[in-house]
Image 1 (cartoon, rainbow, N blue to C red):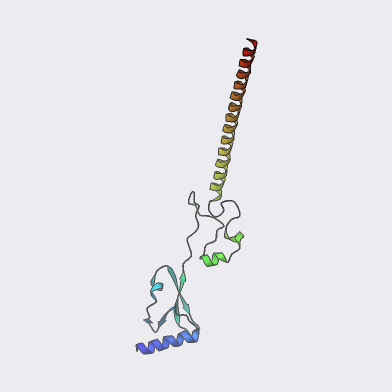
Image 2 (image 1 turned 90 degrees about the vertical axis):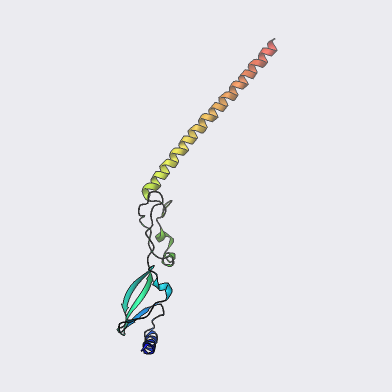
Length: 155
């Protein structure tokens, strides 16, 4: 019986060009899948071949949705799929065309840019203050030196 079943399966493989990565259900009997297909990382779908045989096909699941690195919200405009599918897309379809597109959501990106500008403006005002302080102290030293030299000359 098992020999007939194996012959029947091989016949079906060759007749319908079914690959070895499928699990066949023939007359209620089940054949064990390969070890790699026993994992639940594969999505299982039943397909009916033209010969009327139900075949179990294995397909890798989609990757998880992309989320913002800052707040964890779902990112819009970033496609889901396996890496080989994403690699076929053009660059403009892979992610939004803005700074930090595909990593940060728009609100977090705006917040980042505002914070960056604020810190730069604070640093620039601090630098101006320190520069003017240094200039004023140098001028005072020069003035004091000039006064001291004039006092020495007059004496």
